[in-house]
Image (tube, rainbow, N blue to C red; front, side, top):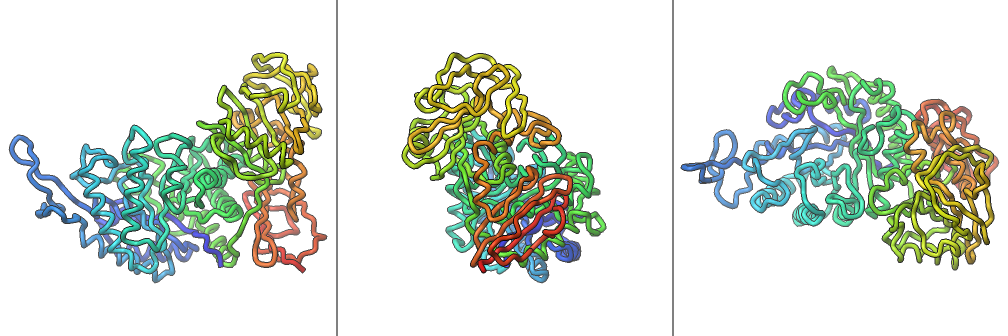
Length: 620
């Protein structure tokens, strides 16, 4: 049975974020019963900080602080009290018992101060910095200890979550403020309970030296999390969300986090905002492809946002934002939407799937520091389209060991740190690795020796045509080089005869140089990854790395299908995910020396839109 967490984020159907204050055991029971009937096995739940620690400050003459008070009755709070409401604690315990009666496990998002566009901090902290203020930190410490102490004996709590998108609590000036707060939170939780994993709960993390960054979260949390809606934060608002780019981004972002943060990752929130950008049937397709893709690529779970519809709620945040009202798995009468129907189908399937081990990774994409998500997106998608899989590293590290490397869209004077560049060249020269460099105006040391090319100058890019693996591609780069081959072999030229793709034997290995950056161009092009609507940019990767699909027992020539191969007991699990909005043919070799069991899908038919195929191969 798979340990994959499949479920929803939950606020009740009647009160939403006010559910603890307006507690109704009957509403919760009926909600969870309906969710359970539609396959939900896991809930991420949110103790509202404002309600669970209702601390106020009382002031006297000249607005001078006099004392802390508790709740609406303003009861006296002595120094050292935690300010946590015992009524709320009992309500949560009742909630957990109801969930347990439906065999639902829980993630507790401990510090829920930010939710759906509104702040829910205790009144005592009005106007204070919720991350760095030492007075707030004192009360936060008491709160976290009290919550974890109260809930640690609840058997169906399987994970702690630091909080809901706590990087939205406060603007900070540097990463050290964020790091010290996160370390304080994690260490405080672990001081009370070290038996459960702690999830980051963040969304929209940066790389390198950003304030809230992937590396720091990976160091401190046990599990990284993504919240990839079809939104601009992940460049997911450029095409319909049931098409190739947007349907693959959630998995891509999660693998990107995991590779850089060096911790496992899950899709912790995902929804579709509203029916404005896609109808309910599309939302069902979106859930299905993302659940299957998350499993196929060894993510740890998938949670829809949100369990219940909140269409009729009148208070903020629902009175502010139209995208917080109709995100439920269920309609407001608790009948299933298409997403719930898909959840129910997949829930029964996932329970019988094995946990995946050691997904095959064939290449490492070494990304530049800074804003590199476009390049990561393209490298990941191109690899899937060719028939192999990539991981990521940043160009200030010693990259993971591989026989295939991609240095995409090199730009500027600091393409990589020297230690990274020297390591890549050493892997190529001494160990026979293959390195593809794509060009966007960057500078390389020993360009002639490494690439086997002589530069005759750089100029602004213009529109060119070149052919790669039989596909004619039109492109325009920001900059281009005028080149002459010395020791390199020219594999493609533009219409003027200028080398575009070259191969240079470098020691035991090969360095490929591409005189434009398809990673940037495809990402900036509408339907830039759809061969039937745009250029076949993936063909460049295919010409360099096309042999890597032979590492897969079953593979595909269809650029809309991504294949993974993972180990299982006595064999392999092969997954084929159709990331497009149309049925796609999966040509697979059936004359193989394995016993074949189809765990999901149908091998005799095309893979339906936004769907997949899962096959178990056992050695004969």
